[in-house]
Image (cartoon, rainbow, N blue to C red; front, side):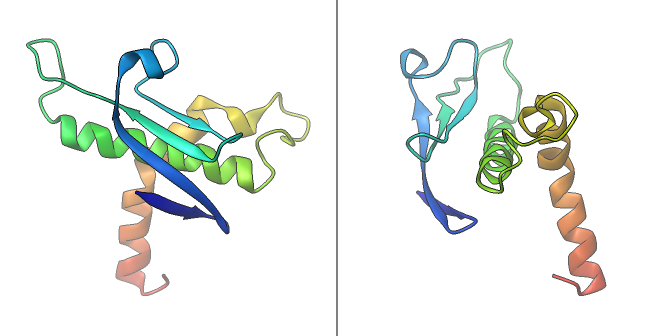
Length: 110
C-alpha cells in the first residue's frame, strides 16, 4: 500500500517481522527510504482484544510522523527541543484526528 504525504509517496508495509523492526516498536517511519512499517501482531492472552483497531492507531501515528517530517517540522521545531519528533504530539494528533475529521465532516468544512 502507498500513501501520499505532502506530495511524497510513502510505501506502507504491514505484518513486518519483529527482526525487521526497531527494538520494542509496533510501528516506525523511515524518512530516508519513505517507508512506514507496521509490526506483525498476534493474539494471545496478554494482547489487546481489538488488534485491527490498534493497527489503525499505529498507522495513524506513523503517518503523522511522516507529515511532521515532510512539512519541515521534524528537525525545525523552533526553540522547543525537537517537538516535531515528539511521541506525545504525534500520538495526540493520531488519536484525536478521527474525532477532528468527524467534526469537520459534520460542519461541512473538509
